[in-house]
Amino acid sequence: MHTNICLIGSTKFENIFRELEVDLSIRGYIVLSPLVYTQSGEHPKCGEKEKEILDLVQKEKIRQSDIVFVVDVDGYVGKSTKSQIEYSKLLNKPILYYSKGEVKKID
Image 1 (cartoon, rainbow, N blue to C red):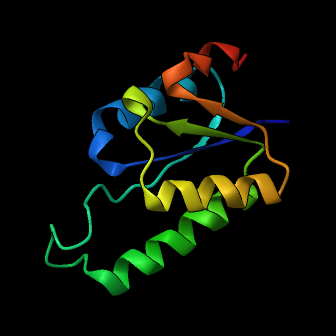
Image 2 (image 1 turned 90 degrees about the vertical axis):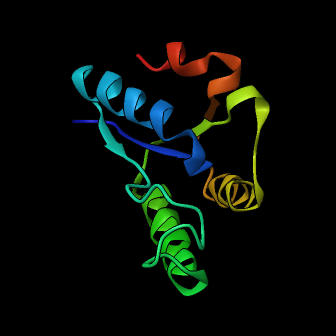
């Protein structure tokens, strides 16, 4: 059986998400990631309505995951990420943090 890991955090850290996607995938994990790396309003196809949809999709990915990994570079956690962390807690998902170096705990 494979372990599903959901990456959450600000999409402004796209480069970190991409590195983790590769690292975790080649270690045998199924990685669920945002996939759309734009902040609301930064792209013509990503306004407020689309951001709401993407937030709902991300919560579904959290629901399907075994582990939630927060990409919180320098401890930064925005409004959407806070909401996703709270949702993860409600579902009793194990939550690990990038800023604490906890990617090493995923083995």
